[in-house]
Image 1 (spheres, helix red, strand yellow):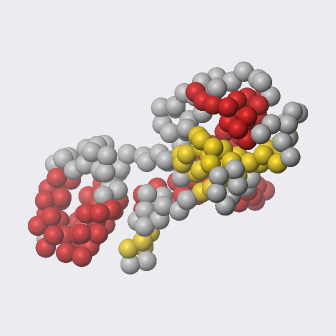
Image 2 (cartoon, one colour):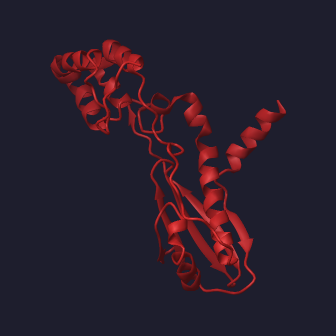
Image 3 (cartoon, one colour):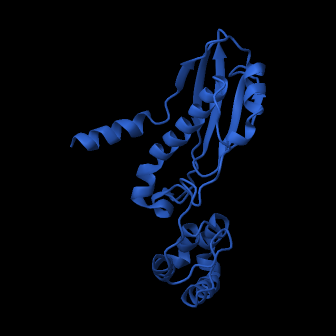
Length: 218
């Protein structure tokens, strides 16, 4: 019970802002220049931006976790790291079929998403801290499997979705083909022809996901 409570707490606070102080006052441009000198230490590119949120360093969106990071400086020495998360949901008839839906990620994948976002934010924050403190940091090396990345589709799940709800294009939503999924939804699987073609392709191991990867029987 204690572990469950702790996990819930971690999930709820995972995307909260991080704050820390630096010993010497710096402008946002000086901070950017210092970070940019070690740009290879970060996964995502970044730049200085202004506007209503104020002058800040903005790290571009991490594509698998949908997290943008803003860095603000106050009084020259107080750094605030603000994560900006984006919702990638896409609902059809009230059912979420987006890339981060239960249909695509599974219950476990959806539940672990905030923690993965938090780990990414902590990693970027820690790297920023070290660079601004003149500590040595290694270059970023992408892992073999990116956190939050889509897992290979399950062939049997895809086949069953096509058999039972293929006329509504649900198997295509599952495969990440949202556009054609919507087309199937409103045309009854391209009047049954597209549904039948997909069924044959899935059964023979020739159906591909949104990235062109063939979904094969394990």
